[in-house]
Image 1: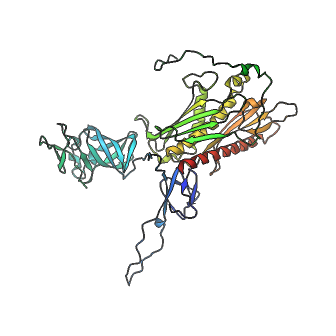
Image 2 (image 1 turned 135 degrees about the vertical axis):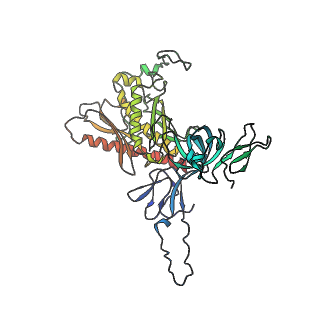
Image 3 (image 1 turned 90 degrees about the horizontal axis):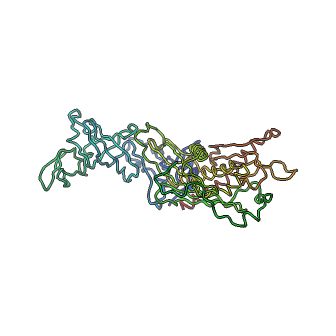
Length: 214
Length: 286
């Protein structure tokens, strides 16, 4: 793994990585007195920033190509892949998560967050989709029973850390919503349009807030 | 204390086999003295990843004193970060909970299944020591459980109790707990500022009229005539910070410096233990 002359390739908590002037802090590091130290046990990863666009061929404009602070390489410590990849992540605001609906109530749906980003979560995090976060339009006329049912798999986005029991999630975008649903007869349904799933065997449709397939 | 959930052994103490050597060869006065230099700690064996079902785990073994005593053997497992129970109020940082338990067979005098005050004490000190090293606000609304099981307690607890020096063994146990918990936390992937290790230093008085009290590191109480005071330190080497300091005993009023000297030696002991810890973690990673 390519490393600069001063930063190590493996790190233990408390190991010095580099000064703040040379690197941006990434996950698994912390800053103390203008220096970056590792806070996890694992391999050091240095991500080069996205290349700034080269000088544009414009005769009458000078583009500033100096390295701005946002273009320092990001140094992070990732847990070694050999330890069966058990790194637990926490759902953070802005993450897209997959969850299963557990309970529906008149003004909210309670879900269990299963996958955050690409990581299958080990801990039992609970989430809440409130009625005003189901859709972006006509928020006052949403019916939870017509948007989710218990057992559906939903793709949602974390909007807030929430209260003591659950995270707050939102499905108010086209690509968020129910991605897998089972009909009352017990068959897996396929989506028809943004608000319906159809059972192929019985031919009946059920209302859901459907996620737009990629 | 009727414990109906388990199949229990016989109620009350069981008598371990007593061998001839122990009672006949050792007369009351014969006691081995400390063989190590005053600044050297005992050899340790530390390994991480011993419990596959836990998020992180570690095992520590400290060699025995050699005069028929047993060494210290600790097993630590860390579960977390996990979601807090619903009833817990919102917390913007991780909630640490520590449990230290002597196994019933760990000491010569059989212990009970229920935590006694010594174990609670160890748990509280351990939590204080680790709290200084965990970066708590990276994990809001989460909890981490650290469970330490002392599989073999140090040395011959029968002699300790008889000589009234039981308290000093607890110090050694605490320093072992801190080191092993630190290794298990690093194995579990919980953000820590630094690797914290525990060390014990004691002011002891050896037999002999001309012996002045001296400070030794990693003491074994039965090797000395009398232990006057001891202190257990949890130290962060990179930041040079002490996260927990537990001091017990009486210092003679004649020497004002003794307290700071004792703490200095404790920090030295902790640094020595930290070398073992760093070595072990480097082996785990690379």
